[in-house]
Image 1 (cartoon, helix red, strand yellow):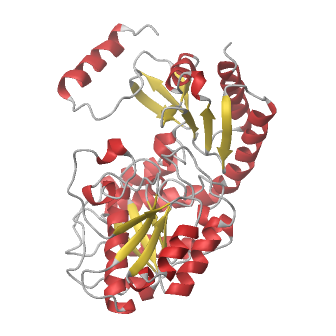
Image 2: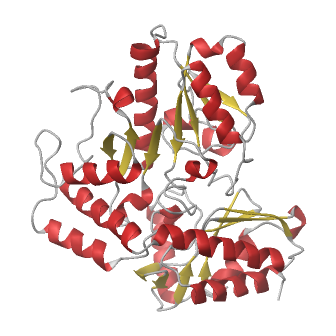
Length: 408
């Protein structure tokens, strides 16, 4: 693909002055509106990544931008040393919408997961009665919960782990999609020290891996049986992406605690949260946890507007309907290069056969045709457009995906 001069200038600046910890497509974006983004050369693209679900409400949604603009002129940061008039109203809206007693606001998704880990351990010591320093958390292979040193320590992805140890102890990794090994471990005595199960209801970074229908129900039953917290990481899967407010509820269960982020701000400002009932959240007392920027007025204004957009515009139900349509359309195409199609809501994983030569070259061809998508784990294309996408826009995109995957 030919690179224009202005684009090349930005690529050279990035190559020279930025750490090389990403391998993005060679497109330089300068503007976004709804489901579309525009590069520095003026070309328009349909965004089929939505910043890993952070832009569920679309780029620069006018209601969210207006709320941010109003708040920018009033008050942006106080720290939690003082109270502000945006914090309480957001916590009320968030907890009532999500069905939990309390919210603890942070900034990034990884911070929300770190908060969940701290809460689980403290609950394990103070409520379950685990001996100090002995609490363990069950996690699953191919997980992605963030990039902090604690979190990558229980990743099974070699690239994420290599060179960053030594790692924090206390995590046990089990196969995703099956609870038989976890059950055996708990029944052999590990239940006495296991305080939590941390799981993605759908694994996003791994390639939109949807577990068997009985997986989450089985985890819920094990947690109930052994007095263990079930914590669902809904940072990518939640807030409408999977066609439900939370992906884990599609299995007919309720988690003891949830982490959310990304779309919580509509993609305009980092906001995340740990949600739980009083029985769990009570372990946090003044001085035990905090964040200077967590719950700042600007973040709260963005999050309130982002939640309102999700509800008022019916984006969660829209995600379910359009997602089912997208899966039907792609399956009906019977694409020979496709090994497996997976999805929930407007969140699809197109896994290609190894002989197809990797997913990146297809993403580059899609880019040339005005669609931005990104590969993961070499052979899978993730498809996650903003939930504001129309049926007509989606159909045009699906036709292009089919054409590219057929090799035309």
